Image 1 (tube, one colour):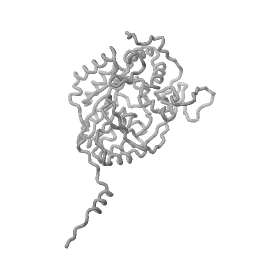
Image 2 (cartoon, helix red, strand yellow):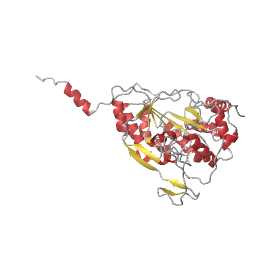
Image 3 (cartoon, helix red, strand yellow):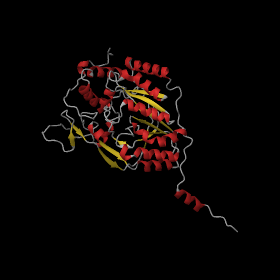
Image 4 (cartoon, helix red, strand yellow):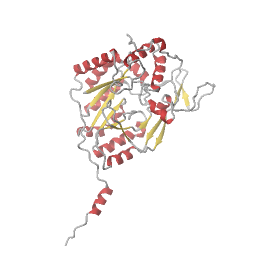
Length: 385
């Protein structure tokens, strides 16, 4: 069915193309919307020295590069009514997981980079993140609230194995009894159970594992360098067994693509020990709409027009609806159906019977050696006689 505001399928123009860039989500590199000049790619027949050969599909696979960056600040704050936190820390710019729908992609346009291939291949690591966080938490005026780590790009993407910036941030949080929330698609979070479990025992940590689909074939296409769905379920099991409150996020739900596996993912997550669940409907702001159309044309050409038609039905006839209150859940028949299916599954499985709230009352700034020496200098020594 189609609402009156939805444009006809004839206008859902999809450009079909040839080769697949294996291991990458985006298949094109739309230029920054802030560029003064436009560019058009032309094949001159010469190989790109910055790329390595593909795997038998006729396409090249761009290498991942990581640039160390000295950040000027580390805590980002927001007042959005659609997200359950007001402050967050992102250890990296860009994300190698390559999820084609990632809402963080458009941010690359601000730096003159492409939200497409650049976003998942040209990464930036905030090497002084822990130092900045320690300084921020030590400020006299700091008001303790839950700190979300990796809310924009995944804090446990593959490069974290080498750079360990997320782990250093968790170590700082442990020093201060700073409550922390994580959401990830990576099993690498298991590495940091030794920090997260003691925090959780104090009511200071919880983790959500994102499992948009329980179909491994679809997962390989929409999030090519993230952990396999079954592996994420095992991560839920490991975290829950360690006493860490763990949830499962079906994010995003993509009409006609992955919504059919929602209940299966919730069942598997509950059996593994997840106690909370959430979902978000696909959003297509700015350049993501172009990237997603391109992805559909390449991987699901027979469904492409239908998927975009449903997307417009839940977004008021547009590719995206940025309004608070509507942007995460959508509107209309399909959105209502997803909401009812999710609620029914949660009731049946016993999800969200108790929402775990992190404790902000235990926050303490540790006394440094310098502070102790200053305090001693300010206190005159009493005479023994």
